[in-house]
Image (tube, rainbow, N blue to C red):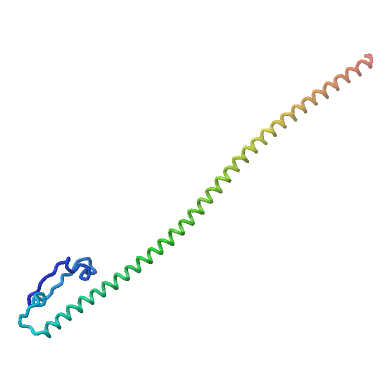
Length: 158
């Protein structure tokens, strides 16, 4: 029996094979023409039923694969949304940490200024203490010298 080849436009989705190509449907010519070429009605009905069963089987298989793919896509979308929400939470945590770090840095700068001021005051106090010590030493030397002078004036030289 001769057959008619139907192109991929006529049977695009149900005839798509799992390997990426299109499977062409071959329908017997006497079924395609729907004319009586000597075959009896039972044979036509049997061939048509076999062809329809094959088509429905492929269609059902394609539907199952499509449903499985759809479930996988939904699951992937849920996983993606979960990852995105976790990343958003981590981003917020990083931004909070960054803000705290800026606050600590500002406080550290203020502390550095306070310590520098204290250091300058300590140096000034040490300088004043040394000056006062030097002044007292000079005053003591002057007092001792003047006392020695007065003592030397009262004691006659022999």
